[in-house]
Length: 306
Image 1 (tube, rainbow, N blue to C red):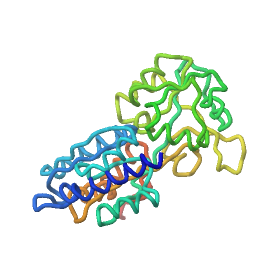
Image 2 (cartoon, rainbow, N blue to C red):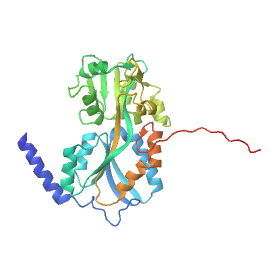
Image 3 (tube, helix red, strand yellow):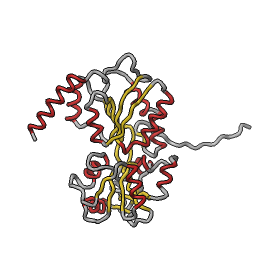
Image 4 (spheres, rainbow, N blue to C red):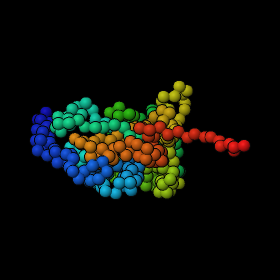
């Protein structure tokens, strides 16, 4: 294992030394409002990111954001390639990763939270499981309970990582946990099976403005999860903007951008777009909680002048 790690490290050093400085070096044709970049996005955020890119292009038609939707692990692998300037994932960099990229690029990588998402539990309308404690989830995911669990991949997705870390604390999944091709396939499989539950990102099932998601909500329900931070015991919550922002829904997680640019280019422009009002409103409309801006509804009355 040490030999393999050493070989990988040597290859990485050679790669970054020879390759870095092409797409990550800003050219005269690249600016916050013009140019072309390639980004990789965690597939569990696909619905909301499609909206972000669509609105961004309508405002800045001289830009081209080439996006690939992949598992979280594949996004991080892409980030080591010179052609991928930004990734959107469910975690930031740890200290070792941060230092590694800074050493190889000769400048620091930028990363931060854009919004807060949730891992939603879905179950068939004819299913019996609707309320979940953490202990119940642990027994289901570890295979102690025979419920079929449908995931959005095998071992490399952010949902798989999050549930293994949060619920199983690193222990393996049981044989009852099966892999679907992607989040859309999870929804389709659970809609067909009364004996199954599934896990998807909230932006796949929480957007009440999305006709496709409204059709899925006719076939599946959102499960209630034990509130672990509530002072009063025995409280449960479904994933929503309100329950995420109040800390009531226990399976919430951040949406991170990670960006490598040594000057202000299109990557910085797109990051700023998602961080400011229009981008934050898109997250809000998709039922996620904006991390950069707070939006509140105010009521008032207008009096007629006498």
